[in-house]
Each structure stands twice: as C-alpha cells, then as structure tokens.
Amino acid sequence: MTITIVFLCIALLIVLISVFKINAFLAFLIVSFVAGLSLGIPAVKLVGSVEKGIGDILGSLAIIITAGAMLGKLVAESGAAQKIAKVSMDVFGKKYIQWAMLITGFVIGIPLYYGVGFVLMVPLIFSVVYRYKLPALYIGVPMLAALSVTHGFLPPHPSPAALVVLFNANMGLTLIYGLAVAIPAIILGGPVFSKTLKNIKAVPLESFRAKEMDDDALPSAFKSFFTALLPVLLLALASFLPFVLKSDSAILPVVLFLGSPSVVMLVVLIVATWLLGTSQGKKMENIMIVFGDAIKDIAPILLIIAGSGALKQVLTESGVSNQIAGYLQHIDAEPLFLAWLIAAVIRFCVGSATVAGLTTAGIILPLMVQTHSNPNLMVLAVGAGSLMFSHVNDSGFWMFKEYFGLSMKDTFKSWAVMESIVGIVGLAGVLLLNTVI
Image (cartoon, rainbow, N blue to C red; front, side, top):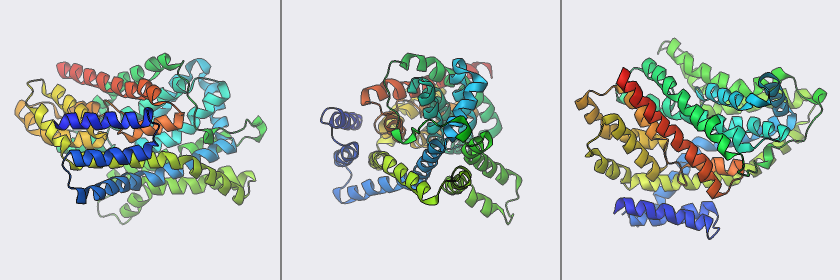
C-alpha cells in the first residue's frame, strides 16, 4: 500500500503540472500535504515537516545557487564566457567540443558538489550554444553527466565518502575503482546518448545570454578562466589541506570555514566583481544591476527546488524509504545488485541520492558482512543505484528543466534517461569488476 501511495502522489504531481498547468511550487506543496496525510504523518506535525524540508534544501543551496547565478550572469555580460568558448573551440575544434565539455565536467566534478558545479558550468555551456549555434542538450548533457557521476560514485562527495566509512572501505581503492566505473558511464550517458537529443528544442535561461562582443573588448583568457575555475581551485585546496594539516592545527578551522561552498562562492563573487567588473571599467551600480537581474531569473528555480525539498522531507519522515528497503531485503540476489536495487527504488520514491545511499547502507550492511562482499564495490553499487530514476521529486530534475527551458516530457526524455543510463552502466561496471577482483 505504501508504494502505491507514493506512485499515486508522484502521478498527481505530474498531472497537476503538465495537465492542469499548476505552478510547480504550488503543486509540490499540494502533493506534499496529500502524501503526508496519506502516509500517516499526523496533521499537527505535517506543516513542520514541509517547512523543514523547504528550509533544509534552501539552507544548503540558496547561497550557492544565487551566488552562482550572479557569477554566471557576470561571466556572460563581461564577455568572459564568450572568451572561454572561443578558446575551447580553438583548442578542441567544433567537431570535438562535446569531449571538451565532458572532460571539463569530470575534472570540475571531482572536487565540486553537484549543485555548485551545475550553476558554474551552465554559463559555459550556454556560451558555446549561443556562439556556435549548437543544440543545447547536445552540448550540455556530456558535461552534466560527468558532474552527476562524480557526485554519485566518487569520494570526497558526501554520499560516497559516508558510504566508505559505513562499509569500512578503502577511500583510495574506492576512488580508483570508481574512476574505472565512472568513465564508461559518462561516455555512454554523455556524448553517446546526447547524439539522440539533437532534435529536442531547448530554450536555455535567457539570463546567461549576453550580446556578442568584439574580440578586443573581451577580458583576457587568464581573467576569464581564472574566474571560472577559482571555485574549483579553492574547494580542491580546502579538501586537500585537512589531510595535510594536523588535527590540532590552529589554521584548520580557518581552512574549513573558507572552504565551505557558500563562503567560497561569496569570495569568488567578490573577486569576479573586481576582475570582470571594476577592473574592466564597469561601474559598481551597473554590476549590481546585473546581479539583480540574475536574482530575478533564479527566483522561480529556487521555489521549485524548495517544493521538491518539502516532498522529499515528507517521504523521508513517513518512513517510506525504510519500509521499501525492508521489502526488498528479502529478495534472493547478488548482494551488489540487491544494494543497487534498494538504492534505486528509494531514490525513485524519495528523490534524494544522498538519502537513498545512506538509507541503503543501513539495510545492506549486515548482508554485506555475512556474504563478505567487497566493501569498495558496494560503495559504488549503492552510488550507481542512487542516481537512478531521477524525476519530479529530485531538485536536479527541476534545475535541468528550468535552466534549459524544457517541457516536462523532454526533461524525462533527456535528464531522466541520462541519469538512468549512468546508473545502469555503473552497475554493469561494478558487477564486471567483481568478477576480476
């Protein structure tokens, strides 16, 4: 009955948005209350659950997305995105631009949290799309597939890193095996799959579309690339230093503070204001107008993401993930496949890859110990499953839809299928490694 309720609520959400054209944020609120009452959450607690879900997801993403939108708008308006696109095309050529995007997304995705990488890379994707008149999904999907896979498979991202600890796996071996699994998943989910998406019409967020500028008016290649890559450099440095510094080092708290994504984005925005703004002769009031326009553009996306957080929280507090995992635990199957399946089903129902991964860990751990399964591969199996079936209860689904200006149908055909491809290929890679290790 629980699974039926979840499916019906998800169907209701799709119908409200697609058929009745209800605003997505309002639809999420309606379905969150319907789901909570149907799944047995007391009415007096339900409002608190909805508010907590909204607060939790905005608390972790609002600064990052807003600052990222401001940075992206400035990168576009200053000509930096045009410069980056020009240099990228000069190096790789139009024929291989997909692979340039894939490599960029993979390198940046290793140290960056997915949401940060997404909002930082979207301006680069759109600058290539607008300048060279290429299909948006053909260019964007390879980069975003790389970002998604690194988020789901590879430490030091939150879910894989936590799974390494829970399964008592080896961080280094998990990363090595993860790279072996990630590469074919990215290739098939990125450049190969995106070739089938050329005919899908996408209307990328207008905020990142800047007027074409003369080459001599563009900022230097150093300023352009340095500003775009500065968040990556700072976050990578902040991830590396704690392993070098002693636990009682006086500067460790400073490093941890400055290395948090929200602080990094604020620092980068200040640097970008100088490098791409005032040092280029722009007045501060004009730069603030650019930032204000970015906030207007991003507000609807923030509300949609907030709504998805409300639904996720209701489903989590109802205990639906634990109930579903309990049902699946009794299936007689290869432990690695079973872990993948549990994570995939929970991901479909709850929407959060992190929740799916960590919930699965608690269920599968006794079975893993009993069957002596490889803990490093178990991390990857759970990670691959947690990427499956991304749809309307996943904030990533809505970020992709709104940034690229897609219909619900085309978002399912592109984003949801891409996420499922990388999840299935990831499982295949794990099972193949299991036969040779």
